[in-house]
Image (cartoon, rainbow, N blue to C red; front, side, top):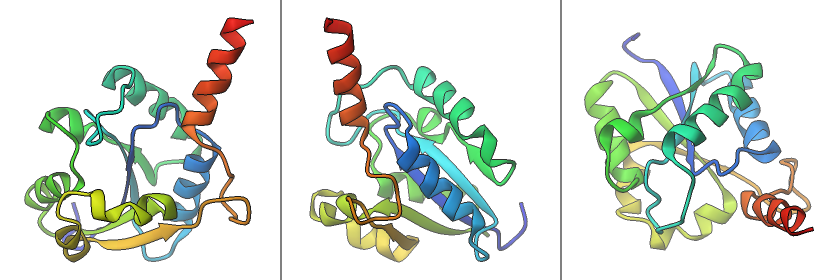
Length: 159
C-alpha cells in the first residue's frame, strides 16, 4: 500500500444494503481526496441489533457494490477482528495494519446525532476525518432505511 493512501471507511450492518448506501459509496468514490472506499460490514453490532450472518451480509455487499468499480472495496476486517464492532477498535486495528494510510470515516447525519452513544467518539474524531452525509427527505441521498426495507419484506411474506 502506498505510504499515504487516503481511504474512506463506510461501515454498517448493511442489512440489507440499499440505494442510500450505494449513493454514499458512489459519492465517496468520486471525491478527489479519496483513493479507495472500503465498505465494512459489522461483525457484531455494538447496539446488539439482530442480523443475518456476517458471511451472508458480506456476500450481499460484494454483489451490491460491484458496479461502483475497483475503487470501492468490500472488506471483511470486522470478521477477522471478531467481537463487537466498535468503530474506535476497528480504527485502532486498521491504523496498526496500515500505518501509512489516512482514514476518513463516512457516517450518516442520523448516526452522527447518536455519537454520544458511541464508544470513545472523541478518539474516533482524532483518528479519522469525519465525512457526515445528510439524511432525510431533503437530502440528495435516497431517503431509505434497512429497517423499512426489512419491514416491507416481512409484510409481503405475511400476505
